[in-house]
Each structure stands twice: as C-alpha cells, then as structure tokens.
Image (tube, rainbow, N blue to C red):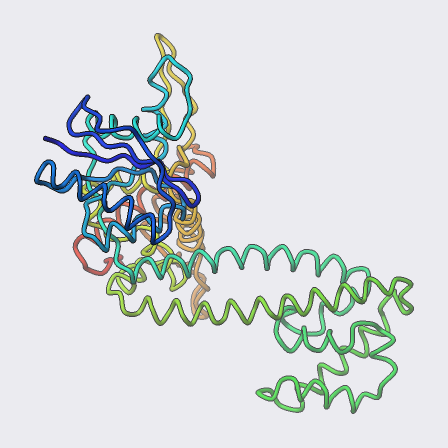
Length: 412
C-alpha cells in the first residue's frame, strides 16, 4: 500500500482526503479546524485509524499557502509525520487536467492525492529554524525599507512646499540630527525668530558626537537657508502639521530598521555560509543575509539550474508547431525577495570602485563579472538581458561556493 492524505488548506480550516493506494480513496473527505481540539481529536484520530488499519504511517500532501498551513505543519512536525509541500503552480496544473469545471475543497484535496501518484514528489526538506528566523527578519526589513522609501518621497515633496532651501544645510537630509532639527524648526519663521547662539546650542545638543564648531557652521547655514527660502510665510498650516508627522514616522522607521539590522547581523553571524557569500565581490552583509535566508539549505538543490529556476530567472520557452518565440522573458515564478537581492548584488558588482589617488585606473568591484557583463553589452545585448545573464552566472557561483563551503576566488 502507498498511503497518502491530501490536505486542501484554507485560513483556519483544512479539507482532508485519504487514499490507501492509487485509485483507492478511503472514506469521504471531511474538514478540520486549525485548533488544538480538532487537530488532536479529529485529525490525529483519523491518522491513527489509518495507521492501525495499514500498519504504516501515511504521507501528507498539502499546497503551499503562505502562512495558512503553519498550524498544520507544526502539528505534523510534533507527531513526526512525513509531509510534502507542493508548489501551487504544480497543483493547479493537476486540477486543470479534468474537462469538468468543478472547484470545491473536497475536489482539491482529492486532486492532491492523485498528484502524489502522478508526480515524483519529494518529502519537504526542512530548513532550520535559524534560517527561517533570518528569512522572517530580512523580509520584514525589505518591507519596512520599501514603505520608508515611499514616506521619504512624500516628505521631500512636502518640504519643497515649506522649506526647499533646507536640503543643503546638512550633508545627509535624512540623518537623525537633520530630521530632529527640522522637527524643531520646520519653517523660515521659526529659524529667524531665534538668535544664532540658541540655534547653535540646539544643534549641538542634538549631535553630541560632533564638535561645537560643526554645530556653529550648521546654524549659520540654516540661517542663510531660512533667509533665501521663498516661503517666508506659510499659508497652509496643514503642510507644517503633515511635515512633522512624516518626519516622526521616518525617524521611527530608522529606529526599527536599525534594530532589525542588528538582529539580522547577530543571527547571520552564527551561519557559516554568511561569510562565504560575502567573499563574492558585490555581496555585502544585507544582501548575503537575504540570499542565504531565501535559499535555505543548498542541499535542497542538486544542480545550479534548479537554483536558477527557484530564483525565477530562468527563461520561459514558447513553441507551437512551426512557431518558436524569439523573445523569452524570465519566468518570475520563484522568490521575489531573492531576485531583488541578486539584482542589487549585480548592480554593486559591476559598479566601479573608487579610483586610486596615484593612478587613473578604474577597478570594478567584481572583475570577472564586470568582464562578463561588458562582453554581453559588446555583443549588442540590451541592459536587462545582460543583467539577467549576469544574475544566472552569479547564481552558479553562489551554488558552487555554498556546495563546496569555500570562499570565492577572484583573480587580481
């Protein structure tokens, strides 16, 4: 007997269907709520019933559903049942194979069991809790960074309508001292209404790591900017109120991102592959943490092409009869977070390093990949095509260094 149980997972509930062997469903399907009582008194009892009947533990097949399947997975882990998580694209293809257009939870659970016998599905290869924790942190960091970037755009647009001359006062507009100063003095009127000495003391108190001369210079710049500002009198008090809210939000985002960065770095340092990835020029701490958390254990892949497919940067192919598509886009069916991290690694790798003061020679961060990129561009490849080719080669190198657990060797 080749036992299998198909679970069609939804939010808070799963539909259960069992097969004793191919083409031999066992009992009618039933639903189980994702709570302790039903998982123990209904689902576990059903699993034990099949185990007693056949003398062996059944495998469980379920579809990847974001976080909805987490309670079921934890339950199966605790009771040591083998489970298989299926990509929704694969299960959808199996569901669409029938001529009849029927969509119910019971039918979906039934199709998952049939898929088990049709496809060579492997048991889920566990990723350590450490890597899953790292993935959760890096994904939240990416999400907050995106929202923070949007907030900065809103802030800059509003600043142009209140105090556009403020932009050049501090070297970094979004530094903590700059934002806190703007929070205290958001308009020309607020700056010009106080003496320069008070302004110097205020700036010095906000940035104690700098000298008083630096604070004095910033205060003079702020006074000059306030004098040049075209909005000497702000007609819209709502603009000033909104600016203060946005500045406060940006400061909060910066604090949260700083905490996340420290947590990610502390967790990633415990993983050997973290330092190995950073040996590839263009891959820094943040990118390395994201890549390793998204890939998980490299043993899940037995060929670099599978890693390329997992990242969703493999070309789609379309051919029918005498027609073969000449323009093939990447599939984008893998991890979007991994693709973004790889794209950033590529941009960093092909970027030129700073010129040495003693020579005019320009040294790219990643010499081998820059040569590869230039070769593709010289062949007439568009920028995006060259970048994707670069990402593919980078993934092959990542696969090699993670498999061998050795640092990347870049020729001088």
